[in-house]
Image (cartoon, rainbow, N blue to C red; front, top):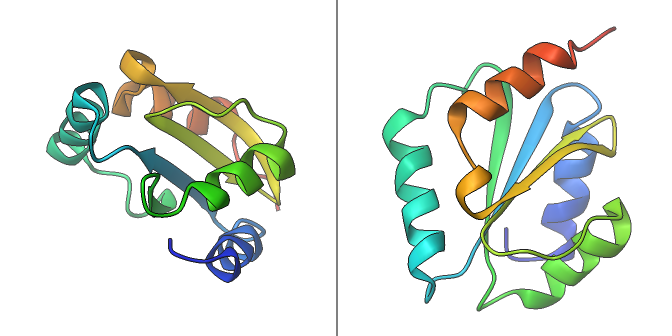
Length: 111
């Protein structure tokens, strides 16, 4: 994700498929660990559309996300969008594939 139009695209996609925004700080060791944990266990391609945001390069997009979806800025952070609304956010060591799966299973998408 490198522009506000990418965020708008993600928002539109969320009307038909869940979207995950991963906000990553390239200089933070905790953020690197969260990214590695996600990548090593990733199996969610069919459940959601992932977007990656480099916070160092595009902090203004993160600020827009916080304002638009009413979530506090964290790094690292996962935000799951459904139908243009945040249904889940987690940061730091709370970011796990298991937690994401539980959230998606709990919030079953209805047509």
